Image (cartoon, rainbow, N blue to C red):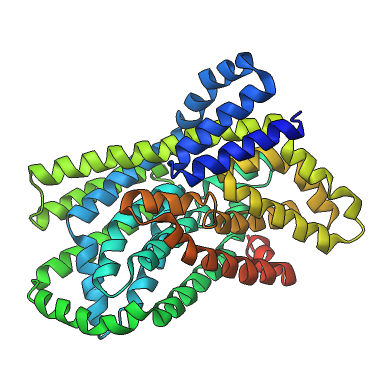
Length: 439
């Protein structure tokens, strides 16, 4: 068990590395190695480093990442999203605020077929941020919208976090998928409202309409055939992926391959495929995939330290005397999870703590179903908050936007999601339980 001196040294190193501006994967890996060494010495550390990093990334579920990133690269380099953004802007009669809403919805669709929040955030950082900037959004707000949209993959089925939670608690995954639909829709609505309000309050947004109009005038000579191909390609990609997964025709990994193939065909029809297109698409796929997997490796080692230090168990043990006030127990549990999700990747938190916390939640009146959905909502919010909001770091890594500028906006998104969605779900449990009860 960790003593106060070891924990103090650990947190000093952790904060120092963050302040030095190191990438989050490096920070998690270095501090995890240091923490394990301080707790158990070189023997346990060697054993963990020999097995945990490989076990974390050598997972069939993670094979969705490179395929969906490749699909996104084909989409981005073929300008499909550019044409869709331009078309949506024209149809909205020059109201660029619609594009932020479109990005949130796009994040929900991509998240539904991937399940990796960091991968989707990185993808949207490359696809959506440049288009939002062209249409009047500041760089930091555009990046914050992309990160917030990426977190929807923790909620929209098939969610990896829900699958892991169902396996641990023996809760039917189908029921979890049904239960998360309404909270997921509420989360999308909250993000949409926040996006619209923050864009209107932005000075950049208020003065950008003339600039956007000029851009629109220049690009009005885009052939209508490109719009038609982009729309058809989008419908076919989404239809094939969603229909394939939910009809049981494709696994998520196979669906990513189908999406990449359809995207490549669309790029061919749009006349975008050449040597540069192929080279840039595959190089970017390798870079983004390696970045995401390295973050996961760091999170795995860091999570092992947290587990060995017994910190989650000690935190949860403090709640036991409060069993006579159930709502206070629930609030403290969710607050603790909110803090944990700030620092640690969601699957690791669930694996470490749910066996300890679920009995406390059930003692406070929450069933396994409700508790799992609330964890996912809180987890999505935690991935947007400092100091270690993984989705925010993913966007910052691909856009080079300073992390503090992104956190300024994403923290507001996170607080709004927790206050609205979690509060409504606690006040009206039917938001979570109604759809599963109709199965």
